[in-house]
Amino acid sequence: MAPYIPLEERRRIAELSLQGLSQRAICGLMNRSRTAVHRIIKAYCDRGGALDDEQRSGRPRATDSLTDSLIVACAVVDPFLDANEIRRELQLDVSPSTIKRRLRQAGLQGCVAAQKPHLTERQRQLRLEFARAVEDWTENEWHEVIFTDDATFSTRWDQQRRVWRPMNCRYVPHYCHSVLSSGRCAVSAWGALSKEGLGPLVRIDGPFTASAYCSLLQEVLVPYVLDGPFEDGCYLLQHDRSPIHTARSVAAVLESLAVRTLH
Image (cartoon, rainbow, N blue to C red; front, side):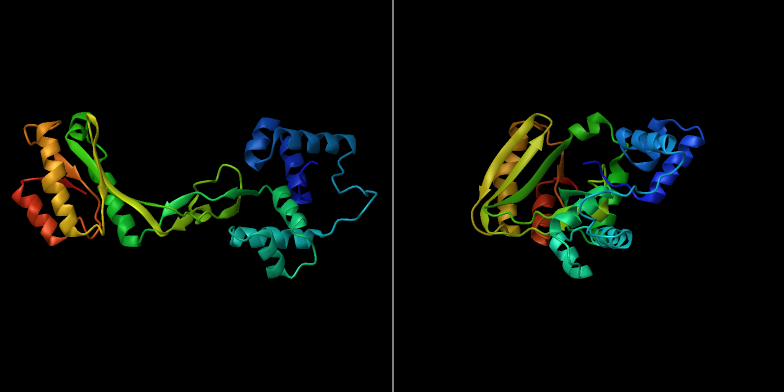
């Protein structure tokens, strides 16, 4: 079944065609498929300029144009609402399948939302400042960096959410799901990566504290670095700005080891 295109949009497509635009150009402007644009232009020509909905036999539509607009508007305002929630919000006496069809007909796809880490405004600003500070670095400068990070792998992941969004808008912030680190912890690990490839990968037993991080630096990172990719001791340690990494005890250890940092 071809997607339903509102009358005003059909008229706009016909106007663009009369102005001399190609069907390919109209597809790009209206975000519609080549088939849909061709069908509308052909109907306009065959019916002498008429684009109104033809009278159809069979069961009438369960919603009128106003209700269709309200359904779409509800999903645009909060794209994470599912069909049942939209039905309750608008107090509609239609099935969830009908609501899904109206949304698809309006060009909205029901997709699993892309996820992004939950960041404060301060964290966003710091990340932007970091990116601008190193945007002109050369390959040789990046070769001096050893990248490190710690992560917790959970036995449970239930933070997926579905979202109604247009095509090609997966990473538009309005349609991304902001997630916090949570879940039942299974394994915590710390690892390093340098110009020579993967470095040590260490399982963290117990809470990952500033004291535990100091031990990792002294007993794992520095021996690996000096025995491997940076025998001259000339390198930059990259780690993020988590409270553990920026603790005073960690700063003192890094200073005593003459380790330069990048974060």
